[in-house]
Image (cartoon, rainbow, N blue to C red; front, side):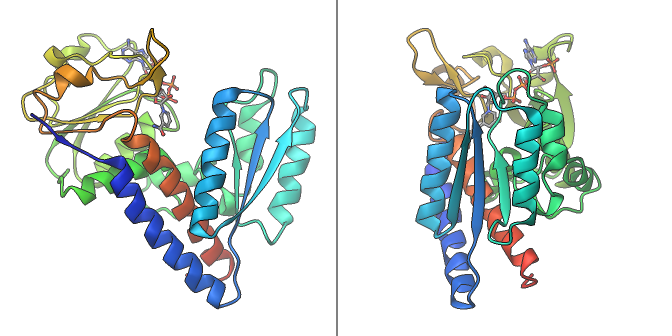
Length: 284
Ligand code: NAP
């Protein structure tokens, strides 16, 4: 039976560290501020934004919400971002994705100043990740490496298989595992014989977006299984990409959904915001 990787426990420890750092900055007269932009009425986005604001408040970070209507134009959104880039009380800018149809996500990401890009989506920051020399790490993959560290799971020399190649999860995850000297295979929807790869994985990261996609027969005995998926099953219940009930019988470690990767994503966002504040105030 696998040992559970408890994202709530790990994230609480990261959040405590962040809160201590914020308190230290406050003592020196430095406030930490995060701008959170939400466009439209997507209920999932509203939940994510509320969770992020709550976590900011708990850590002593000032969050500033900018809720824009569904019919906002790209130009209007870009002009808000430019204003926030210049605003010294704002250290980090987060624009909740996905944006309503018709808005240019790429332009939005490019317009956020790389210094305030706490999601690490800007090409400057992804380029830094590529060369292994970075300030901000993308929240979800960085949260996963934090969890591996917490449980003393060594990556070096391990075969790491990442299913999914998105810019926000799969690709940066592969880079971070590579930096830790893992041997990395990235799989996607065009991969032929996916299970042939996943069965070789010492560390398997599933970032697909399909409920219960990874079944026990796709997993090697003793593998570490990280489930990034956040899906709704047929009953409308939150579930991951991994068939947890069956896979936990084979894995050595496994993340649950909920309570696994999700909480780590927010913890890393807070960490990145403090890093941004320190750099902008030259205390780092
Ligand atoms: P995405 O952009 O939709 O990417 C999904 C990836 O899965 C793509 O690379 C796709 O391949 C691959 N894929 C789809 N079907 C496949 C199949 N049958 N076999 C192999 N690969 C397949 O999604 P994402 O943004 O990376 O997110 C993935 C999941 O993680 C979602 O459930 C999302 O909600 C969740 N998520 C969770 C957190 C968190 O904090 N826990 C954060 C971010 C995302 P192609 O590239 O070939 O299309």
